[in-house]
Image 1 (cartoon, each protein chain N blue to C red):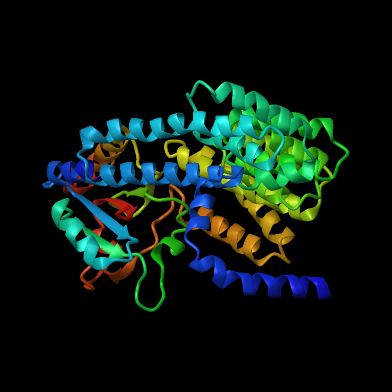
Image 2 (tube, helix red, strand yellow):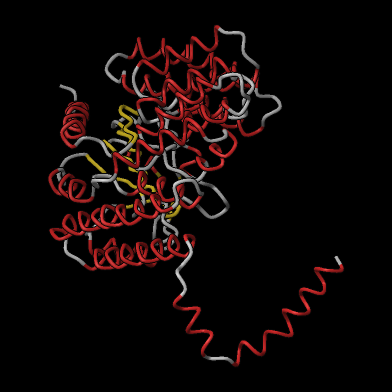
Length: 108
Length: 328
């Protein structure tokens, strides 16, 4: 999924879009190397937070990857279990971006 | 006991003498290997050849991987004939049976595969059910084997152990064509079998409307509370998933969600004595109420990979793609 995610981040750089991860890896050292080689520039929460909070448990995640699309108002608009089809994902993001940009324009 | 003790003593006294003796060792080496030794040697050889290919594949480039994968499969084909020969040398014994089962597990595509498969079918039809169950517990299902096992279970329907045969197919081979039939049969004929709940739960993980229809049918039946609980939880899962596919039709999504909540509440009520099942159902219900499409995303506050704190709500005003990921 990295190549498509990289291209989304690049393509939508000047749009109101953000890719945010929740990462479940245990080996942080190994992961940092992957971030470098795969050019993963977007930010991720650690899944296992200090104090015992587990984000994937709060979100009842049953399979990895699971991807949510959240609109500019903070409402969940899509949920994909397993890697989403690129075309479907792109179309859904485009649609949400249109709505976000429309709302961002000052009312006449 | 007295005789056994004497035997051991004689054995111990004899040991040093034979250790010091070189020639008898040579004689032993020339002795024909036993069937068991031949089987173990073949298996060891096979495993080491495969490991070598795996090691090679880990270093190979992407375009060579496919070739190595074919080579990996080829080892199974090559050894299938050796194992089949061993089976022919031991037509009635357990080593022969081990060898035949080995061929149908690893020798797909080999010229002896069909012959081995036929022999296995005969074994499945005739060997004592108890032995068959033991053997199946360490065997991976495949379509032909599943069919033979189900046929045997039908023939010996009255035997309590036939339920174990059906359960093996229902749980291990749920994804195969005969798997669905086995799940239905297990629920119908052996409703008290310990694997029934697991079989029912697997219906809740099926995609498409099939799972929903079957689970509703189970709830109509007079089944034990724990089976009912598993069916209700399965239905809750199916319906929760359905709401996420109705992103464009909010009114319909709400209706499906309400139905899902009903079944999940039922599952929680029926699972008072089963902590794991209860927590499972509660998790799905909570997600259906707060995390489904159309609901406001709960905030996430926490550290990033460098330990710096941030919040999901920092991105309000932007479209966020939230990816639960891991590098595996």
